[in-house]
Length: 187
Image (cartoon, rainbow, N blue to C red; front, side, top):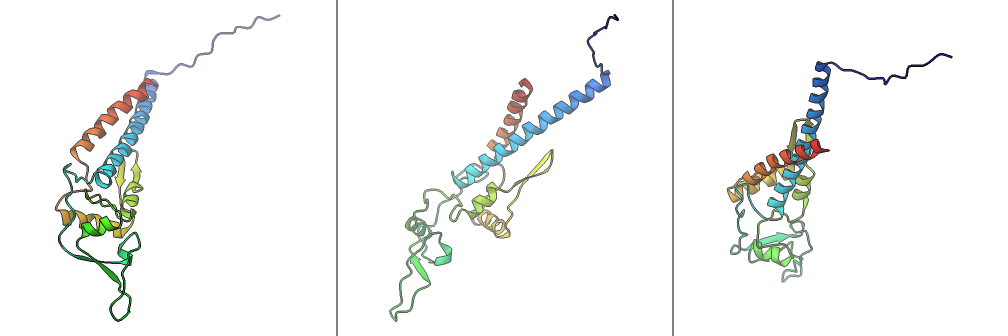
């Protein structure tokens, strides 16, 4: 009977192989932490714009007009508005409101802050508009051309950057990268 040597089989790697493997692990950790931070910052930015009504300088975007009369047609409102009839019986195509703020109030939309969310289309496009370009690059885009015009128009109207990262969002991004890297490394 022949005796078998059952030595533990070890696979050895060179120093260069070990370093290469560790660099690959670190790169994967960095990419994951970066992705989490990107999505977190985008979420914060969306809340700032569409919930809190703040511009990129972290101040109130503005106040809705409460003095200038405005005519609103059915396609300009997310809710049906009563347009009534002229004296001759023909239907009106618009309804007059004492101001844009009064219109928003009449349809139950928020009026205490400018949240850029009337129909929800711009907000939805913004929220779903984050895409990966490569492992180190993500971009926030508005997929619908009409929303690009809306965003630019709002910034021009209010005279402020709105669809840019705020100082707080930038700082939070870096903090999230650090935190997530540590958490991932700990396992």
